[in-house]
Structure formats: structure tokens, C-alpha cells
Length: 235
Ligand SMILES: [Fe+2]
Image (cartoon, rainbow, N blue to C red; front, side, top):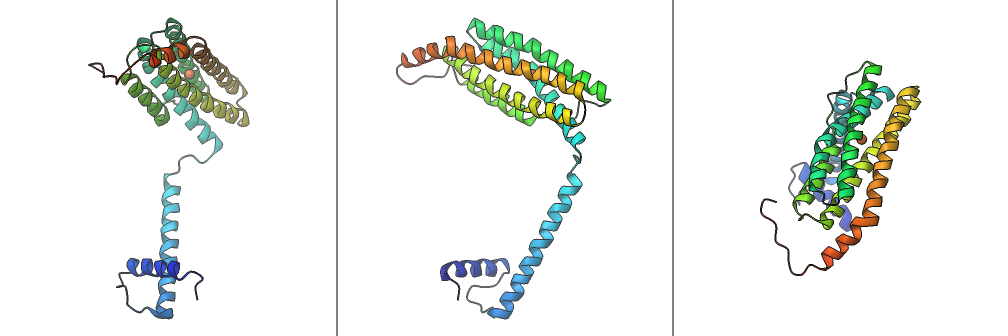
């Protein structure tokens, strides 16, 4: 007897449904065993097909493949950022924030060039990979900017969005640098480390601007508001 008859009946009902048998039809122990064996065979066949499909679609088979995929991803991420940063400059009101984004735009262009040099060194192309993570982070930031009026509150939001970008890049460069070292590409690893340091510095600068000038103003401006906000036309 099963320890939990209710649970057992649920399993039986599921089995009956899967095999097109009507509830109430007697399957008996022999048929039940046959069904279980069929289930196991179906499951094993499906798992085998899944694995086969997975193997057929797997293009990254070595650490070198993984490393190339990572730096192609970073290359696309940096290129997306060169387009997003000018919009962040335009949307910011705090002069220090504007200039931090302008500086980082220049650095980002340098990061793109640095990666191009790395591809050249490796004799590989940098194209062919879309960084969907960066696309998502930028899209989320743009949606947030579109939902806010210009001012210190929006600046606080822009900093939060930009720090997500930086943290994403810090993570990507950290792994790529480590993998480059593992593969014996010490020169490439130190170039990636250089970018990593700049990303960390950009993140720290954003943090300082938030803590020393933007956040307090944002809190003041939002607490002085009364009543529901209306969206500005064109946003
Ligand atoms: Fe960068």
C-alpha cells in the first residue's frame, strides 16, 4: 500500500491521461508496470534527443572558444554603450554627472579599440555576437529615463542604471581577464585588466556623485512634491 493514497491516485490519474486511458478503467498491476516501462523509455528517448540536440548546437567546446565568445560579447556591449552614453549625457542635469558620462564615453571608445587590438593579436574577428545582457540593461535604463521628468531624481535613477552597466562590465572583464591568463595570454590579460580598472573607477565616480550631490537633492525634490505626477508630453 502506498504511504499516501492521495498522492498515488494523482500519479495514476496522470498516467491515465498521458496514455489516453479513461479514468476508472482498470489497468491492473501488469498494465501499470508496462505503462511505467513505456514512460521510462519515453523519458530516456526524450533526454537522449535533448542531449543530441544540445551537442549539435554547442559551438563552444574549449576554454579558448569560451574566451573568444566572452570578448566578442564585451565588444558588442561596448559598442552598444558608445551609442547609449550620449543619451545619458543629454538626460542628466547635474554638471558633474554629465561630465562623468562624457569622460566615460571617451574611455568606452578606448575600450572598443583595445578589444579590436586584442582580436588582431589573436587573428580573430570581433563580430558575430550580440550582447543581449547589455541590450536589456540599456533598454531598462531608457524606459526609466522616459518615465521621469528632468532633475535630480532622474539623475539618481540614471546613476542607478549606469551602475548596473558598470557592474555588468566589471563582471565580464573580470572573467575574460582570468580566462586570458589561464590560456597563457598574459599581454591580453593585462590589457583587459586595464579596462577593468577603468570600469571600476567609473563605477566609483558614479557612486561618489550620487552620495555627495545627487541623492540628497533627489530626496528633497521628491519629498516636496505633492499629489500624483502627470507625464510630460513627448515622454
Ligand atoms: Fe567599457
